[in-house]
Picture 1 (spheres, rainbow, N blue to C red):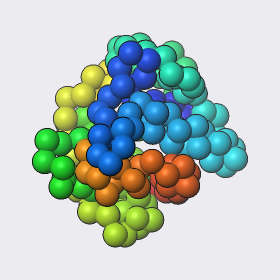
Picture 2 (picture 1 turned 120 degrees about the vertical axis):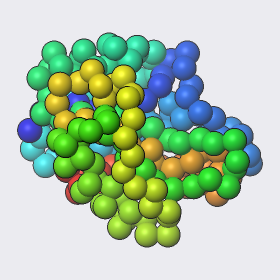
Picture 3 (picture 1 turned 90 degrees about the horizontal axis):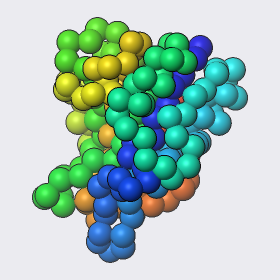
Length: 174
């Protein structure tokens, strides 16, 4: 299977930032998780394309166009959530509004993530009109791994071992 992995944000776009008790940019967490995810998927025999493999800016339309040009079978965008209230927490997976193929991909991935991190809140599968989900021509999901704005989850997201566990959970779901 051909998988396009999209590490959200990058370059001049840091994404959300955790600021307490230390600073961590979402773009760096996303890239780390996606590099582990690429390794896991390739070990299972899949062909993997990354929309970025270093800290560079890539437009949303370019991300979707890249996946379409590669004729990927599935598209996975990886992010960290953020909210003004720093007690918000949990894992959620987004699909394009009404996408049955997206939901079919999202369900086992979300289930695997929540099973792997059973002490994390299951925020479920949500629908939105996100550009990378709307413009990709294959089943597409956007995984919000946790809230970088929550000090407890910021510590979780700063641990490379957790990045690898997240990657393994997503791979298992696929």
